[in-house]
Length: 185
Image 1: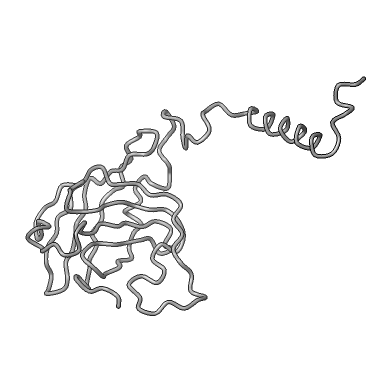
Image 2 (image 1 turned 180 degrees about the vertical axis):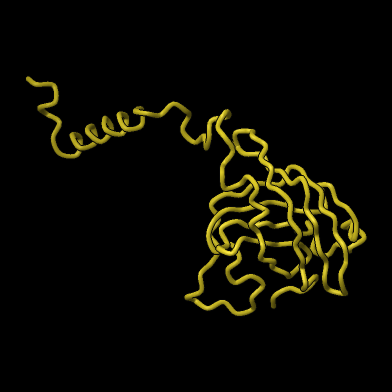
């Protein structure tokens, strides 16, 4: 009797699927499943210098938010406690990131600021889609107050660390929140 002669129907399909899956998984894979990049891989090109392309500011709340024109890269730096005063946040002044008073990260994705600080969101409006998030692991934020509800932050030496442990320089930028303390609703 042939060894696979009795494997018909569901059992036969399952065996063939298992063999194909094992073959496809093993071929050409020289790293552990789930590892985004080997530790010695180059930094993701989308991250290096990404702040330089962020020319769109998004005011609202107690923080600084910016993106590139396509909203595929976003910067998010905001007060960990939305009730914190400017004195508690250390602004105006200089803040070394990371800092316990601030949540700070960058994202990659699509429509990252869709419906930003908007009171009315229509059913057909696009929503933000996040592909990846990287916490800021270094940098300096120098904040000045330009008016009663306006603060500007100059960011220098901003860095993130990838899952593989590579430190990536994001560059420098200046961003303004013209609606400091204003929230939707």
